[in-house]
Image (cartoon, rainbow, N blue to C red; front, side):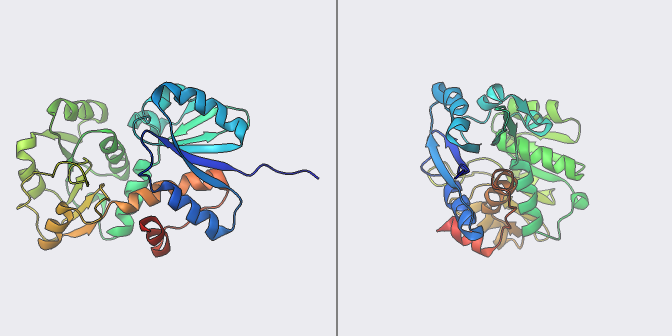
Length: 277
């Protein structure tokens, strides 16, 4: 009797024990009654390519990639999407039947879907975006917002040079603002996005003046631990519409799960509850 291999997927990072991705993907596998497993793998940088080349032979159909390997994996992959090249990082790998590794980035998709789901009234022409941070997550946010049609993104980063590099890569619709002027930038924005790790559990607080927040704005924080950050709490108190960061994690996983397991999952209340369990 011929037996088909059970499809395997997982997430690779260093460290990886904190990741909620295994909980999420296992929830969807159970929900759809699909054969398959999703496994967390703590892999150091020196071993990354060796591990990736071996996984398809063990039945893996793909993996998610997280910190600190999102940039390094671009050099290892045989094929890289234009989207991942633009962002400069990959978070999703597909192991093709011909043995080649295909790299993509779904973070921008996850950000935009979370924003649209959590704030359906927001539109790209609502007004300028105030973006805090200029790292890898910010690049995915910028790419998705520009693609959606946003006309101006104001970027403030603690290291101005990094924000200027972002402007160099993405063009004139980005305007660099000094970090000390971030409060004024927020006051002018229709959408406020924190893409830094500031405010995350175990990290430094987001020490930016928030008295410019006002009703009518949409405010979202990519941090989801805690789920209600100080930024979101201040935004709620000011009458803003807030969108937490958990949805980005959930939505970015949708296209990867579909490619690996052949079913497109839906992000709903049960999905959120499973990820928070």
